[in-house]
Length: 114
Length: 112
Image (cartoon, rainbow over all chains, first blue to last red; front, side, top):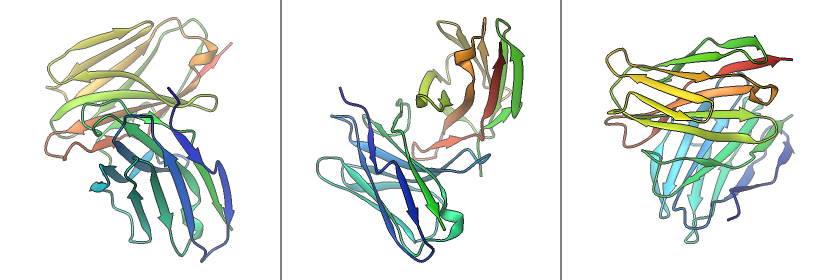
């Protein structure tokens, strides 16, 4: 089985721009979660999608949004980028959600905002 | 806020020694998971332990869970250079709508 695929791997943007990140989960997985990781901060939960519905949301501003398609692929969008948005964005898929299920992570998208 | 807090933040040991990392959490949990992150393989699941379990093993890894103290420990025996990584605990807190809450991680360095 193919693993979780995130594209692109690297992105460089300037302040004020917007960006869209993509995540293709493992075949058969219906849950996709997104995380932001900055040095020394661990993983900060952004949101989780299950069967095209946002099931959980972290404490991030409305500039961060996402969606999930019928094939379980998910996209994350960040509008009006700020310098502090520079981070590694990780996507994880699981069979039915975060609780009690193993999360399988992609390699991440490293976003640099200049 | 982070539910899980790993301790220590960083740990450096000689190859062949055992490494122990701890995770404390604040509220009752359904289960707790440990993950490892290194530059080569990204973030990978290691072990899941449920609230009614006290100990689990996987190869050189041993995880214990003490729900009365709200803490867990991860022991890596006979460490190898390849164990150099950051280790995270993630808790599935009761009443959290099954959302995992992550600690900031322990950075483990194995010296040859």
